[in-house]
Amino acid sequence: MSTLPLISDEPDYAKLIAEGATAKKITAVQGKYLRQIVTNCASFGLGVGYIVIVSEGALPDSFYIGSDGTLNIPTDIRCLVNSLGGRKKEFNNLLPKTEYFVYYVLTYGEFAGIISEGKSIVTSA
Image (cartoon, rainbow, N blue to C red; front, top):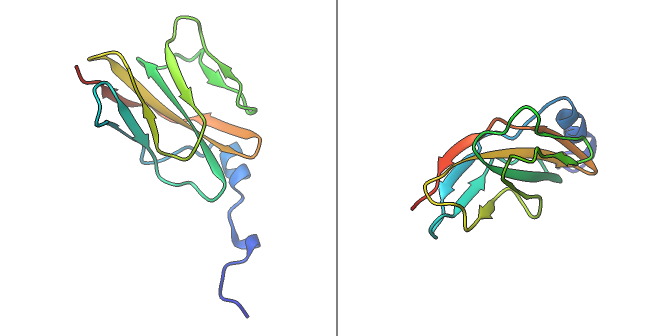
């Protein structure tokens, strides 16, 4: 008998995300280049994807993401979105000395969860 965990022992990530689980331990730090932000968060689980939204200022309540990953972005909001790759993302050529907020959205399969709380960072000169 194997001592490896069974597939049935794995958490139901889709269900957890649908019930409101969000990314934890979000970090946003200055990158090695001017006006670069590097973001990361704790791993949620195998097969989970991460959408990262970086906005100039905090996102308003009218900004939301649908369960299918469709973004509703008010026209007066400037933001960048990266849904490719893993948890760690880099955002370059941002405005100097500007406060940005970093948000994570967990995804699993074709389902997107809710937006995390924002993490504030001010870019370099």
